[in-house]
Image 1 (cartoon, rainbow, N blue to C red):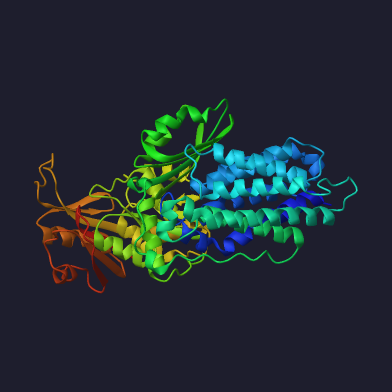
Image 2 (cartoon, rainbow, N blue to C red):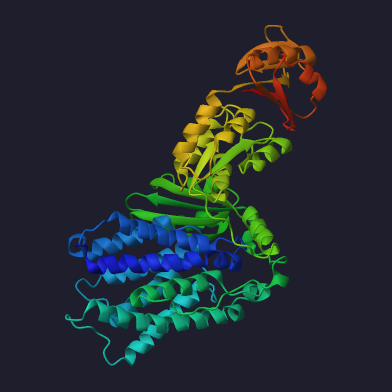
Length: 550
């Protein structure tokens, strides 16, 4: 039989996560501080999901085998490593503070006295995690709950439970205490706009504080085995949704999160270095594990600060300008809820407006490779984050990008599988085998198989003289795969290249780039007889024509 106290703990966490998930988009829409990036609900849910996953990993071991100290330590670490964003990191510290207090009192039943102590330590941990605490936020909400529980405890006739108390009696007493604390948190939420000008300007309450009330309401419901206490829904006023205030942190592009694990870690020693390259800095944890959050234009520099300290993992980089734009667009459309999270999303590196459009029409998240198809690891990580799926299939579409793609997959917080596509036309055709409802492993196999059945090539303008004297700068050069097969005038070079690429093919796709010197009709006339032809304007800068044969 599983230990009932552990079962109860898991039930409470699962219920609080379910309550938050039911209003996650609502919490996201309220998010205007410190940046209107619309991800507070997502970040808080990620923290709780990490805790629940840790509890599930314990299986049915009895609590007396695991040990309370070991359990709460594991939960605190899971919350820390699973946290993302300001709200997720602060929530992880609330969890850590409460867990540490529970661990410090082995053998005691969880009763109002222990709940009061846990709230006090949780509030202290939350405030300690922030360099410049802002009132009106979730910090105020957790402190209000701690104060309310302490006040109630002073007037409670029977604050302690005896050893013979049943689990049902324990649940009901804790639920009563938490419901009183919830009332204090709701009052703090209402006061938020008077304490923080940006909330008043936007006509909203603080997203993190509101999210915290939803979590506590879920806990009360789980303890009582009934519906959660009623909480008012919070909507962004329509007249504010298109004119959101700009904040200090919006001057930075990337919300960067990562973990460091090792020995003898001293996170606070690096805070000043982080503040020199960004703001909204949070560095929390202990000597074995640290979680870092910073808004910066240079995620690589932020990571480099900790490279000598320990092993870096769970890297997550979000482009806040895209998040802010997405939130504004969603609110402008009436605040419609986001679509269900896909099991797998595709991210591809592409250059050229037409090519990017073709990929986006397939539902693919596009990374602009630039003229040289050379995006950084951190640009790839930002796109992986933006995909919003549980897993990501990443297509580099160039051998030059493969190393950065593999590094991004290694560092990414979410699972990423790289399919080593060699060219954008190859990735485009192969993605017809992609299904977002399937796992990344299944999609990788399907897309790889589809890519393996393709022949690709292209014709470009030579940027240099050929050392062997075959062509001059400005001449056309044609490739089948990576093999140079033709050179000279554009029309003849294209014809020979098509013969190599399109032989025995049923369909040839041609994607025209910037300055391509031949019309579509000329290209089609150069095809081998009986081959079906598909033509697109890609706008890519380096290749006159990209070719793909199926």
